[in-house]
Image (cartoon, rainbow, N blue to C red; front, side, top):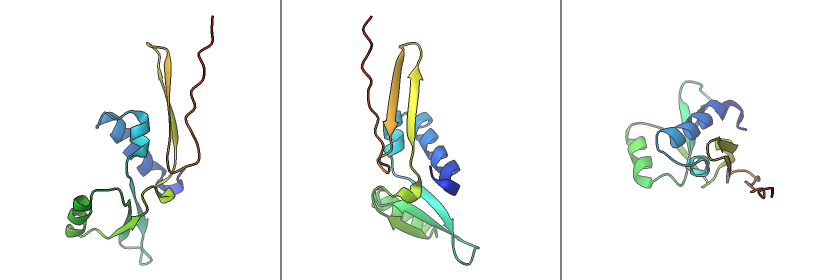
Length: 112
């Protein structure tokens, strides 16, 4: 979920998983940002969650970015759920975005 933000939210999730080696729950939970065009339509506002390190926010501002800091887990960043299958181990992993109302529930292993 996330409307026009979907490609950016997906890219952040995949980068967290692939580039930073996070598990799928950590990758979904990590702070995010998104962009919104301003009323003038020339410049974009960057909406960013308040959990981003203050030093990082300051560096972005110094580079000229116009930031709008949102709450810790903002639904403006989209929401998601994820499932990953490890076929070799025959194990499923699940994650639920803390920005949404879902949950990752384990299923009991059937007895043989």
